[in-house]
Every structure is written in C-alpha cells, then in structure tokens.
Image 1 (cartoon, one colour):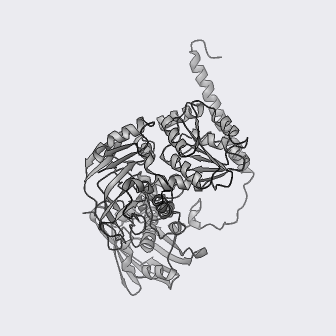
Image 2 (spheres, rainbow over the protein chains, first blue to last red; image 1 turned 60 degrees about the vertical axis):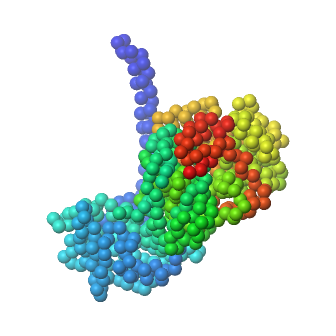
Image 3 (cartoon, helix red, strand yellow; image 1 turned 90 degrees about the horizontal axis):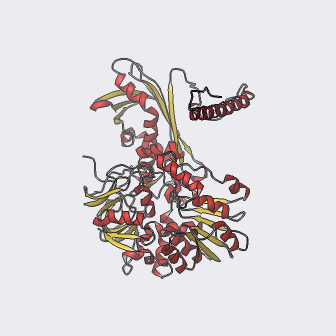
Length: 213
Length: 389
C-alpha cells in the first residue's frame, strides 16, 4: 500500500515500472543462465580473424573486406598491379609511383594537405596476390595485401583486401593518425566497392547531376 | 530547368535548379515529355520513408527524348525512351540474373553506407527516391541524367503515344511481377489488397496469366469499379467482412495467392492499424501492415504471398505462426523492371494490356504540388496524375 499522502496514480506507475524492471531482469537472468551452461574452451572457428569479437593482432588494427567482382582474375590483378591506377578508386590516394619494389603513395590529409607513405612489395604472385609493407622509418607502420580467387559458379573473382596498421603517434603522423583511426574500415570498404564498380561497369556511380567544379 | 523538389512532409515545390549534364561514359540526358506521380511518391510526401533531404528532385515514372549521350551510351539523340525507375548497371551478378532491382553498383558507395546497417545489404539506386537508394535526381523535371543508358531505357517505336507506354517505367511491370510472383495455376483465385495503380495492373496481369478469378479489395468505390471493369470481383471492406467473404467466394479454400498492393500506409480503423499509426506518428515504427496481416490470414494453406507494396522498417504483431503453420511462400521486392520492358511493350502494342484507363488527371509540371495534394487527399477520383513539363 502506498503511504497515505501519495496520490494513487504514482502507485500505479511504481507497480508498472517494477513489473517492467522485473521482466527485464527475468529475461536477462534466463539468458545468462542458459549461456552459462555453454561456457567451455573453444576451438578457433573458420571465420576470418578480423571478424572476431576480441582483437587478435596485438598492436595492429586489422581491417579487411571481400567483394565478388564479375570479371576474370587476370584482368583484376593486372589493373591493380598497374599501381598508378589505384587513385582511380582510392579516394584518399592522390598518386602512387612505383620504382622497382618500392611504392611511394601520396595520401590526402585534412585541409588540403598531403602525406607520403613508402612501402615495399613483399609478395607478388601473378593473378593471385600482391602484398606490401611500410618501409622502416615511415610515419605509418602498415602492411596490406590484396588477394584474387576464382569465385564459385562462374561468378567471377573474389577480391579480398586486408590492411593492418599500428595507429601511429608522433607529431608528423598525427593528422594521418586521426584520418586513419577514424575511418580505415570505411575507406577500405568504399575503395573495394569503387574498384568493383569500375571493373564491372567501367565507371564509378554518382548521383550528382553535374560535374564537380 | 524546372523541377519538383521535396522540402518536408506535405511540402513539395516547383523550383528552378541547374540542368543535368553527362558525367559518366554510359550516361544520357533526356528531355522529359511525360511524368507521373506514383503511389510510392506519397510515402515520401507523408514523410514515412527515411533518408529524404530538402531540395531532392522527386519522380521515378518518366519518359522523354534523348538530348545528350555519353561516349558509351547506345542511345541516339532524338530517340523516345521510357526509363525504368530502377537504376541497374547490367553487368553485376544480380543484373546478370535479371534481378535488376538488386544491382550492386548503381547506389554510390557513400549512400550504400546508409542501408548496410539497416538492411544488412546496400540497396540499388532508384530515381527520385530516398538517399537510401542513392538520392538520384528524379523525373518530375524538365531534364534527367540517366546512368547506364545502354541498359535501362527502352526505345519506343513511333505510333505509340506517351500515355500508352509511360507506365512501363514502374507500375505496369510492378503489377505484372506481382502477378508473376503468385505462380498462378489453373483454377486459382488471386486476391488483391489495394486498387491503386499497381493493384489494378496486378488484377489485369493475373487474369492474363490465367487466374480463374481475381478478387480485389479496397474501400474507394471508384477504384473498385475500375477493378471490376477488368473482370475482377470486388470486396468493399467498409461493407463486408473480408476474411469471411474470401472463404465463401473460394469454396472454403481461401485464395490460392494473395497480393499486398497496399504497403506501409494501410487504411482501415482496426486495432492493429490504430496502434501502427500511433507508432508511425511518433516515429518509433515505420510500417503499418494491416493489409499484409489480413492477407496472410486469408491465404489458403500452402498458398503464395506476393508483396509489391513498399515497406521500410519493422513490423510487429506479425502473424508469423499463421505464415509458418500454413506453409506459405512469400515473394517480394522492388520490381526488376528491365526484365519485363520488352514483353510488356509488345503487349501494349498488341492491345492486350490497357494502360490509359488509369489516368484521371493531366497537369503541367508547374501544377505538380496540386497533383500531390489531390492524389494524396482525394484517392477515390484521383487515380493517376500525368504531367507534362
């Protein structure tokens, strides 16, 4: 019973709130109990490590994405291997210059600035895989690879790109760090989708009605 | 150019905006000669579809004359074309399977981000609709930039009037696909909820596909009359218990296939609809699914549900038990317009499909806001608005 000086409707509300809280608690308890029975050592499953619930790569942040592109493997590999093509679908990359195994990336920074990243090609298997790693002393510690596999059922090629990086510190790299920390996963996803558009349709989709000035 | 732009719920205006131009190699620009207001434009008008921005050019049912072509377009200047409302690249996995409205590439990557968390996958691009589907400028305008113009637009031969072929852009193939999704067999009864343009084309299509009978359900007398003209039997839910009537009109079976041509803004003063309406009003629910719920209860055991009606979010009080226990099958989706264009153009040419019966009002583009107001507020008489810029 509510105290005499409490209006009856607040008692009704108190009962309603108690019932809701009680229901939620009962639900949570029952879920917790049923999942508790299931706690045991687990063998690693077959999913890519980057989709794990807990980080598995130490200091490295790892982002990656897979798309299926309705084009033959050798065409996709050849387009990517011609590194000066990359800015056509990588929005933040102004230019890529290759000399031997070394790639020099000019990356757009905030407010019209740009930064340079040097990487070395550490693996290049024709029509299968290209991997690169930042050269010692680079402001960004990063490693990436792109893999090309035949997709099942004549669907074309599965393209998987993975980038690992240590979110960098240091004065020079700070702006890049912010850029990278904020959206590396989003950027990677966008770039692969643009790559797919370009390879499948010959152009990158836009809803704009006029060319950007 | 002049164009009809969105500025908020029940606020559309005709404004002067920059002309479109060719951007990508496969683009074309067309000068619009006829454009219509679609029932799904009313969902935008009512503000129940998320992802609209002030200044968006509406309209996804349009046709016109080619005035500019990109280097990879296969169209020629001067050709008359009807443009499908679905924007499809023609090259991706889905387009190759003729699932054009599931195109992977037509929605720009930035706007793909909007639907991936909401729907699990990015949607394809549509003209004149929400930014969830790319935010492409639409066809209630003098000019439209048409991407992938080598795949989408269908060239119209001389001798067919604009009004005969305009609805190839959306509502005719949508009604047709709705009937096709019913997998109609001999002796089948198909029940259609909603006698708007899509529902009426679904009635016509189901009869062409050999349905034994089509029963159309609505509450607007004039729209029911149009359905009857095409050979449907009609039920006015204001005077009849729909579920009971459908059982009695099908020998106690229930309809073999049901079509929800109503979508997310169901009418009717029923408890479920009142609750849905309240949720929609305060913004905690997008969809009012009364017609769909009733259709599922009506459908015979082992029957088929076809849902051309548009939904956007989440639905509760869904009769999932009835759906499972009766072993129903369910097919839906935005229309794969390009799959049907040629066949339906032929049927129009041969006089098998009647399209012009639907048009109740002809306006100029400048009168578009009035068209929206009346198509929205006076649905009995205003069955279809066609405008010329």
